[in-house]
Length: 298
Image (cartoon, rainbow, N blue to C red):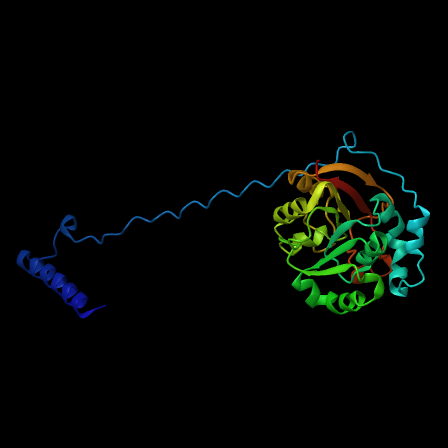
């Protein structure tokens, strides 16, 4: 308390004592000074929680029928190429690259991109499929490169079969450079769920993909399926996402579902385990995965 405060307090006490002495006793209760207590200030009400978007299950009645995939000889020749690395070949049984290229109808001369290219397994397959007259933009974010992709990605890009792959180091909200426009296809293979736990603005990412595609261009989605009702809640723990979430987000971005395939489906998958490459161990390549073909309307 300041000196002035002490002085005022002393003066008040002195005046009360003087009054008491003059009356021969303490002042009546009604006349005693009462401390002034400010009424409690109510804490402001927190703003209401934003309502979570409703996640609708896939309606079999409106979903397109799964497409059986026949792998033509020219595509199978790409998969069987003797100059593919042993490491890549080891992944083929769980990834079905021939069916992937065939279902999405990747052809020579196309301009395509892959988001989250990682070490480049899919990017190289795309490069072989589009050939010398085509181009593949392989995007990776800074975090992905620093954590695991830089060495294998850089080494792969030095090989002759990847001369038509353009390295793109950009963040997912703006994943492609200005020259990557009028694209035939953009691929997202086993990655969309990662955009969730990485905190990516997925609406912005999908809008960027939409802008980069030509009218009629394809947004190719492959990912690990989450259990009904889990939404995005297991994107980091189990590396899965509920299929209906992806459908809803892409359709909100303006894409139209043109088809789906079942060559990566596994009805025996309990979908309650972590299917990231390291954690999955011997179960790698056995998760239930959805394959969706979305198009930018013409």
